[in-house]
Length: 393
Image (cartoon, rainbow, N blue to C red; front, side):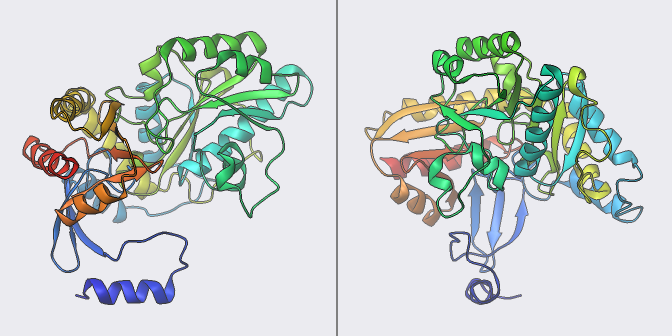
């Protein structure tokens, strides 16, 4: 097997340098642990930007589902259906608000589908074109051109012009949302918790007021759950923290247990908007990926991982607060989606944790993001927190 340095050298030679990659090549994982090519072990408190956020690395149930499906059917195209698709779609909708599902590969693609659905549905309902979309400062909805248009301007540089009609307001300011609505507005995109933006949780009263405003003005409300679901926040879906139901929900990252599957879920009122020819994805709902996703949802249900996420996340946040670390300004989150805000840059803490065998992430320069696999063992939670607290102190 190649070494770290050999794999990194090949990476630099053959891969486009669009990622700020660390000089580490991962080769094996198990649960909340992962090993690099030189045999070094890490506790994973970030799970590949949440992609392994439920079951971690190489979970036996997901691996078995994938292996079984590989031997049966790998691809048939979406002119036909397949059973894993229907099993995953049923699991997604049973845990949420019903409706129907469109499958694709990534969260950004799910948001692209939602954009088209919202524009088409709002225009049809109003009997005239409606194209404007409201999103929130510090949000993140993806890097494809439509999703990028909804995302803050710092990500736009060099790619302008953006999709017309994208309007951004401050999270929590219902008056600003109301003022931004005109007769061309189609919908609003909201993250139940802003992940990339710093683990910001909108106030429940604001979200409920937003739901009412959308109803009153004939707008569709989209919950971008790419980071917050399934089970991550101590609820099946993050919108459930706010006691509302969206019109559309987008999913990605953890849904496939590390395999590329994402979904745009439309509530019953809008579930048949995207008729044949309106949208598509050649490999969306691929039988292997869908089988993995169905195994993830079954695992959540069988092992009560929603409750485990809520309980372990609360313990993690309390442990960090109880450590009374002077450089920690705030600890916030829901379930096992946690932000630790520092009084200055967090790059040193990120690097020091990695040097000690703990993988975390830093966003907004000063917010450490913790999102371990929900199946993580208590002993690894304790060991990871011990490393984090020692570094921060």
